[in-house]
Length: 492
Ligand code: NAD
Image 1 (cartoon, rainbow, N blue to C red):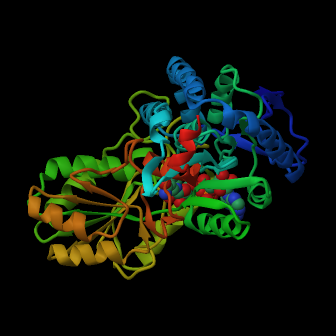
Image 2 (cartoon, rainbow, N blue to C red; image 1 turned 30 degrees about the horizontal axis):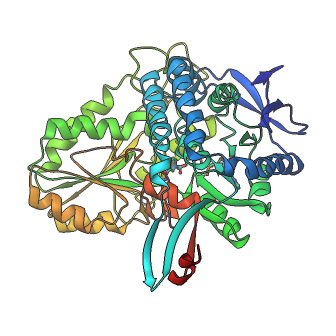
């Protein structure tokens, strides 16, 4: 909820004004207008949110899962009813196109749908007679108070990777959304407020580092979910686990896509252009490097240069626009300087998106699609996550060389292959070191019932977001061994 131009926190079932001394402006990245001010919630207020969540836990965990999921059915209905309105908010604060905002919200809602299956999903297992008259059961119980810290690039979807599973499993939940895009979730929490959940089951605290640290240090918070850049993911994982918490921390990426000469070049180019330049390249599953094999090189180069140069860039609310701005002016500056670095390291600029000017949006953070050719795999630019609409091209002679380059990156979020050969596809699927693999797919984003499986520097922890991992993460396993001697049953 917004009051007097400031976002409120949602704690203990009510909207509360923070007594933060620091606030940040949330700006529309296309128009540079200030949308709202977001409080940097201090430690003591985070403590109050944790306390109210802990107080709610005792009764919430006893609420039958069949009752708990009724709130999710209502949430799904409300999200559907307010779908367009929420998507517009996402475009206004995050910059992506309206179609992209709708797409991500839809993926978020899919997680609400999957979490309504919790009564089946959180079943345990048992074996009778592990010894005569002794049975053993595995039960799942909720963990307690859990928190999620989320990034700027999917304001609607990523919080929903966590919230539905957390509460359906019987936990009480605290969300700390990105301070750059807090408006989407503020509106979703208006809807959550209508659900009639017991106060304290879900809470929203706005803020940045200090707010995060307060969650990481609070002894009552039992589990932390994080999505963001790798350095922060690593930091959050280390601090949370050092404090005895369970943690799942997803980090950044540098996703390679390999194009073989037998690929359908028209399809490959269209899909790779969408993957590289969709969401202005600010997707952890964006293609940032394309490795062409042998004669795929020249055809692909020509097609992708054309796709990059003709992509319509502008304000995401304008219907014909295919790519919006990047999130902040600092981000634009950083991306442009990384393009410059690539050039200084010997790359050739095939399409240059720097110094973009969009009529009517002078203050916007616009960069047009950029393609760098002949990027040296050993250069710095080849390893850095640019997180903007910049595609690097590398050319090799064999699929083995391509897979070596795929596996040389420190990240492991996604790797894709374009081919019409089943044998090549199997080889790639088998050998590529990444958690999400696409075959003739450009953004291999797992559906809600599969885990979002990053590897290497793209993920710190054991259990990923979504799918069965979510149930593992949000429950403690309890094993019960029971002896009931047969002769006792004869006493009655
Ligand atoms: P970020 O790391 O800057 O911020 C993420 C969250 O961490 C925010 O809520 C922020 O407030 C908080 N934070 C930032 N610095 C912190 C610090 N020093 N201490 C404690 N908390 C801190 O990331 P971002 O710029 O918002 O998001 C983009 C990044 O997220 C990219 O690297 C992208 O690849 C990654 N990402 C990864 C996935 C994935 O599933 N692997 C998904 C989406 C985004």
